[in-house]
Length: 165
Image (cartoon, rainbow, N blue to C red; front, side, top):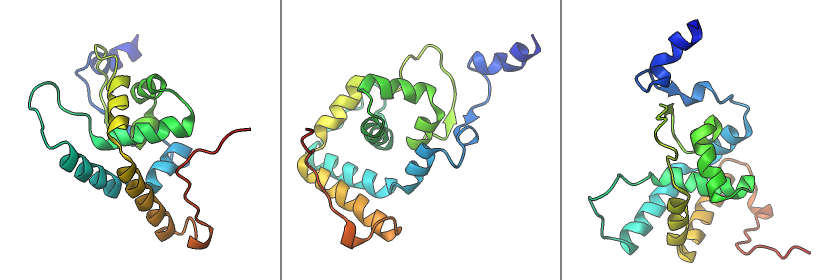
């Protein structure tokens, strides 16, 4: 009973926010992956591309989901081999996924079943054209070379999926 009394403010939505970094160890693979991605450069490239191709912004409706969250979900979805629904659910329940998305605090809102709807992820993916994808791959490759993770002699960028046989 003492535990419930201790957690009642947090469970009721009036307690302190949890620090996501406190729950994801430094050695966790998703945290290590997230720490190597050049998020600011990737987000800036997407924001620039979207601003030139989709200049009209509306003040109606709810606030847009941050680009960093959508990009991280899209990359993690492919890395983990899940669906849009799976990765959106993991965003709500998995601290490592929250960390990768750049969310550093968590506050439970039990009335909200999704932070990001799978349809939102689908719409985001539809806005990434070939030119933007090439730019994102170039940014990621340059960051990997700068960090010494790969050498230019061994770097092969294949944007087409290979046929599985």
